[in-house]
Length: 90
Image (cartoon, rainbow, N blue to C red):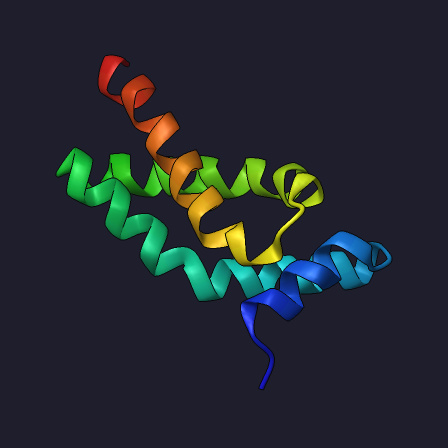
C-alpha cells in the first residue's frame, strides 16, 4: 500500500498521466480532512465544499514547491484556512 508521501513524490516527478493519477489519490486520501477543517470553521456544508474544492484546485502548483513531502497535509490545511476568510466575506 502506498502512502501519501509516495503520491506526493509521484505528483512532483511523474509525467502528466502519473501526476494526475497521484493527485487523484491525494484528493481521495485528504478530502475528508479538508472538508472537516472547512466545515468546522464555516458551519455550512456548501461553503465547506466550495472551500475544499478551491484548496484542491491550487494544490497541484503547491505540490511542486514542497521540499519536504511530509509537509503536504499541513500545507493543504494552510490552503484551506487561507481560503475561508474570503468565503466568509462573499
